[in-house]
Picture 1: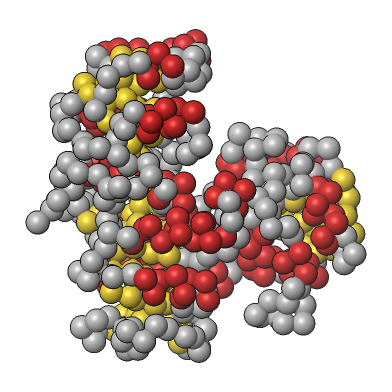
Picture 2: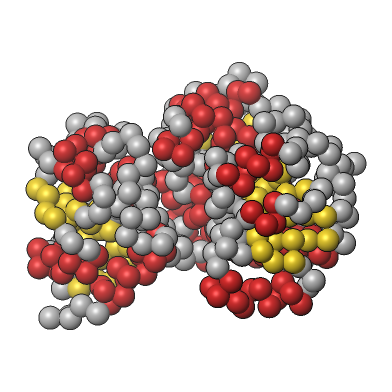
Length: 484
C-alpha cells in the first residue's frame, strides 16, 4: 500500500510534530523549488504562505503569480511570516540547516520537510533517484533519455533543475522519473523512498557544509533509509567508500563495475550485476536474463562515463524498461552541458568545458578522460580537503598522477594559492585575474595537439552565481576566439 500521504513525521532533529494535511503551510524560499512547492500545496488544497529574504522589487513577477493563487507573500526576510500560525513548513534546498529561520521553526515544533520530500509524497509513477559525489547530473540525464525512449511519460527532475514538486503536478501512475538528489536535499527528507536508489561514488565533497566526511556519507545514505527488501539499491562496487556504506541497506543490492575484480557484500548474488566485458556493457538481471550493448554506442568521453552508463542501464532495467529502449537511449545521448563538453577545436587545440567539476575527484576524472598535454583552467571556492590528490597515481596509471597530464595550470579565484601550494612543485602555474584573462592566457599558450580544459576543482560562488554561469562564459569566450 502506498503510504506517501500519511501524517506522521519522524523524531529526527529537524522533524517534529504531526503533519495536518490540507492545513496551512509556510514555504521558505521563493526560488524555483519554493514556487513549485507552493503550486503543489495549493493544488492539494492547502492554505499557503511563502517568504524570502530578497526584497519585493526583485520578486515582482513571481509575487504576481502567487497573488493570483491566493498565496500570501512575505519578502525582505522571514520574520513576519514566522509570526503566522502554520501546520507545516517546506524548506527550499538553498536554505542551510543552521539558518535562523530553521531554528525558529524547530523551536516551536513546526514539522519541517524539504521540497524533495513534499514532491515525493504527492508524486505518482516509478522513480529512480541518483546521488553521488560526481556524475549525478550526467547519469540522471542519461537515464531520463532512456525513459524517453519507452513511449511512456518520463520526467527528469530534482537537483538537475526541475523540482520534484513540479514533476508531481504532471506525473501519473505510468510516469517514469529520473531524479537527481543532492546531499543537501537528503538532509531534510523523512519518508522519501525511490523504487531504485543509485549511489555512484563517494569522495570528499561539501565537507565545509556537512562538517566532515562521515557526516557527508551519512547524508548520502539517507537515500535508501526508507527502502525495503522490495526496492533496489544500485551501487558502484569499484568505490570502497560506497561498498562499505551500502552494507547498512535493507534494499536488494545491485553492483556495477568497470573493473574485472571487485569486492561485494556477501548477501549480493554474484550472478546479478552490471559490468564491461569485451568492450560491451553487460547486465545480468535477477531473473537470469542478460542485457548486452557495445560500449562504443556511448558517445561520452572517459571511463567514468562508462560507469555512469552502467548505473543508468541497471536502474532502467530494474524498472522493467525494455532492452531496445535502453539501447536507443544510450546510443542517442549526446551528453550534458558543462561536463566534458567539447566546445571547439581550433588549430588542433581542443577546448573542453567541464565547469561541473566542482571538486578534486571530478577534476581527476576529467584529466584521465583527456589526452595530454593539458592546459588546465582551475580555481574558485575550495570545498575542503585540499588538492594534493591530484599528485597521486591513478588506477589507469599508478606511477603517474593526474597532475602529470598538465602542461600549465592557469589559476584564479579564492583557492588559487591553495592549489598552487599543493601542485606547484610538479606543474607550472600562472595567475589569471578572471575567466576572460584565463582564456586569453590559454589561447596564447596552446599548441597543436594540446587540450585546454576548464575543470575548476572548486565551487563557483566566489566569482559566479553557479557552475552553469561559469561554463557559459567560458563557452562564449572560446566561441569568440579567432580561427587563425
